[in-house]
Length: 77
Image 1: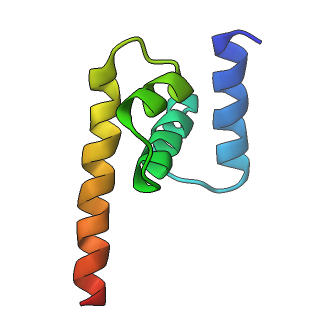
Image 2 (image 1 turned 120 degrees about the vertical axis):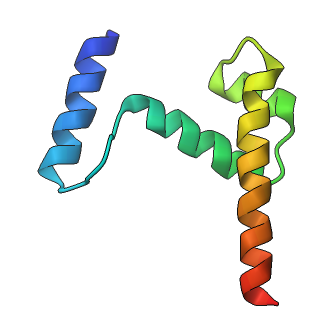
């Protein structure tokens, strides 16, 4: 399936289910990257899983996951 049909399907399902905001196929990659980073995946693993050519792309997920973990720790303590 090419990009446009995937985009159309994702945005249609998002609208049908009442999801608000910008819901795109790319959002699934960001969510996956953040979740696997939060579970301790390394930058090379994230890069490989998401198909990024450059390691620096995985760094964004690690930074976000780290800030999320800090926020969760603050709530607990």
